[in-house]
Length: 507
Ligand code: BGC
Image (cartoon, rainbow, N blue to C red; front, top):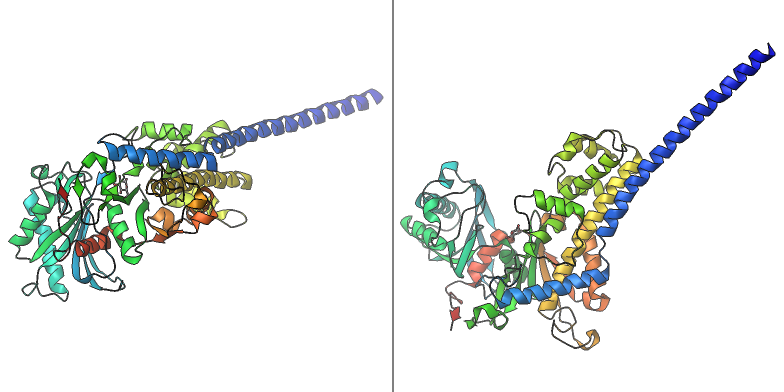
């Protein structure tokens, strides 16, 4: 009997030890997996590091590349395109001006009445889809359709078509164009859903002007605007005359700024009345070895339709941030089971869009319920523990913080190029304290900046860190809305026939 009891107790003890070993083994295993995930996060944080020192290197690289892009065609990844806009709205413009905005499947018509004295802008706007057959047919049909829509729009408003004194029109045309003057440019190629063969190589504003004349509309295409940033600087300058640059941070990103024509070396002898011109940087294409690049960026770029292109944009803009986060979650999910079995959605490019990522980042509920909902609905990852949800928030934070800080460095790069960063310009040897800093405004547009609070706050924080408080307090960021539409009408006003029109000369 004693033996039996002893045998049973030994058996129980062995079983208990086995269970304990199993539990401990599982714990060790799960801790190991958790450590692996934390390792992935740590590696991400390190490779996204944007210390002030590194940001200052990016600032310098941006300023140097701007110089190189102005010195010769193809001299830099920055295209530094001439816009021929040599005159920005001052707020004193008066009259009625129109704008057409063509860039996608819809086009818009706008009418703005300006009363001088920086009057409030309250444009009439109408949007229309472009019939599909017109996107691939003949150019005359497309422009006749646009002219007819404009005609109807004018008739509906306060202007009678018959009594219309010549009205100035700004035309935003978001396709690759070789600009030849403020109101003319030749179409290089169509993009998006358009493919009208007979238009390639032709003068864009001329084609619209002819259609307006055929329709009997007394309007003059005063400005052909091929980039949305140019409209943004115009709108920014209308409200604040200290505006020297405009930045768009939305789906894509880009910047333009007000440059002295004598600094545009690649176009010697450029004469403008103001002595300056807006330069479209196409900064999305900027590249520097100082940019903190991760393995996720390299994969994203390699799998994109435009590898080695738009490197800066791929780290900053709304098109890509969500996808970088998706790639990090995928890596973690492959390394450990903290997200459950690897969801097939994690392999889908762009499955996680930036607005959803921003919503996770800004989830302030204690249990991170919004994070849980988005992971489940968007990425098909249900029921993960709170600590894993916290990890996702951290990934969003790292990716967004890097983006916002790099955008801030880009802005300071522009300020440095034009001597508004308090350092006396790239070649200046003066110390910061010697330089009297003028109030400097930058117009900013785009959903990433306007709708993503964390992004905006990180950008401001970095501006202050890079510039230092003394200089940063002279730099103002003004949010604008619809520069590509309203800005075109304002440019039509500032380049109207009563003002300086096409007076840019090459001597
Ligand atoms: C385009 C720029 C544009 C920017 C903002 C970029 O992807 O290359 O031309 O200004 O997006 O819309």
